[in-house]
Every structure is written in C-alpha cells, then in structure tokens.
Image 1 (cartoon, one colour):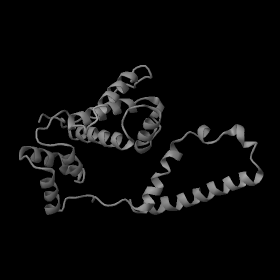
Image 2 (cartoon, helix red, strand yellow):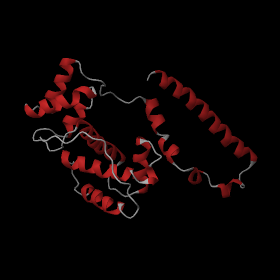
Image 3 (tube, rainbow, N blue to C red):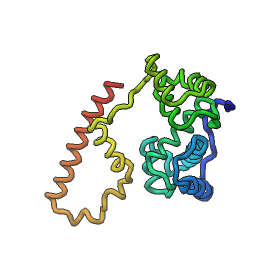
Image 4 (cartoon, rainbow, N blue to C red):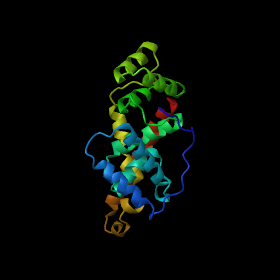
Length: 214
C-alpha cells in the first residue's frame, strides 16, 4: 500500500471546454452498473474535485454543490454517490494514502470515518497489514471506545431541514417568475410574503438551537 504525499488538492480551474472529458469519464464509470471498487471511487472523487474548481460552482458549500452538479450536469451518479466518492478521495488525500489497498475496501473506510481524524491513518495501515474485515474493524472501535459518531437513524427534523437544500441552491431568477408577479392578486402576494416571513423566523430559531450544540 504505497503512501502518497500529504498535500492539499490544488488544480487549475476547469473551463467549460475542459470539463467535458471529465464528464465523459464520469459517465463511463457510472455505466459500469455495479458498486465501484475503492480505486474507482477514489478516481470519481478526484474528477469531482476538478469540477469543483469551475467558477459556476465556486459559491456553493459542499452539500449544495453536489446537488447543483447533479441537477445541472449529467454525471450518471446520484447525489448520494457523488458525496460518498468525493469523501473517499478527500479522506485518503488528507491522510496521504493511495487507494491501492490489497485487503481494504469501501466498507472499511466507512467505519474508519467514525474515528477521530488523528487515529484514522494508523488504523487504516494496521487494518491493511493484519487483513482485518470491516466487522473486525467495527469491533475494535467498540472495544476501544473510539467512535466519534454512531450509525443512527436521522431525526425527522434533520430530514425536513435537508429538504430545503433544493430551495436554497436554486437561483432567485428561477424561483420567481417576475413576469408573472403582476398577475397575482394582493391577497396572494401577502400570503406568500407571510409564508416566507414565518419560514425565515422559524429557520433562525432552529439555526440558533443547532449552533448551541456545536
């Protein structure tokens, strides 16, 4: 398992002309119609990182960016897959590791992601050397109390908040047909303003409660 230099990813910005080969490779990999192996997942994440340099997506944070790419570009992958494979690339790059393992796969990295970042590299190298299964890796986390987060069901309120991503990512010009505003009655305009005001106030209170837990 060769190490790679631990470095920040710095790539030249992709232009509309140069991104097409990236999309073609992504679509080809999506067309494999099977679960990607770790090196393939890493490559998808690497290609996505190149796309993030494009100015069209520079103002989005990570969660919104994946949805915007999925909405505007035909990559062949779901939003969930885009997030998963990009995380694989970022994680291994941060740890300075190559994806060419002999005994580790995607399941192992999902478990390692629950570890404190300071322990991840050591555990990955040990698991590879001793040929651990992902189940053995999970048992080690439990035995040593190393999990930083548990696999638990997402609360309903969190799902409701995530449903707002599409609304938040959509450009205002696409949300509001300004040419049609004149056709709305005063009562309808008032209703929309009240709904947005109530949503804004509630969002502020929820955000304050969540920030207190950080």
